[in-house]
Image: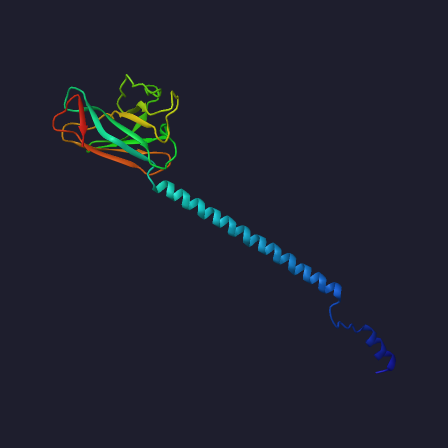
Amino acid sequence: MRFTEVKKMKRLTHYDEGFTGLEAAIVLIAFVVVAAVFSYVVLGAGFFTTQKSQETVHTAVGQASTSLELVGNVYGAGSGSSALKYIQITVACTAGGGSLDLSKLTVTYRDNEVFNEIAYDVTNSQLDGTEATNSPTAGKWIVSQVLNGKGATQTALLEPGTQFTLQLHPPSGANTNVNQQFTIELKPAIGAVLPITRTVPAAIQSNNELY
């Protein structure tokens, strides 16, 4: 090989002996940016997961706990026959519970003959503290009186310290004859179901205390 050819090959050879300071800075900045973005994504996902876990816990506690409780006895009004005309109960918020909108309350009636939902009759409900003069019709329930209320209201909002007296008329076909057992379930929008099981007495009077 001639000397001129060797000289040309040396000129074409590229030597990379190391990074310059600028190249090292660029690589370092790239690593820092990627790490910062990754950390932000991980922290954001962690905060989101924690928040969802807290919401799940609070929702579970609210759903599992009973927000409605029975106050006093359960009464049944006789209709001059061997069956009850309607059932009367008084309810209140549980201790430490918040307000409940009873217009969103789901009420069901069950005995050995029927299992039906009882609808809310807002027209005949009495929410101003006085006692209702009209009884509920078949398959309906009303707020017959508000006790310890703060004044007249047009909404069925049950507040802590206030009691609502409810009258429930069993649905058509219900068996509320003597010695028959029935169950009424009250399901608020938030909270557990409040079941109330009672037995019709052997002799029905105009006003009967049910056990």
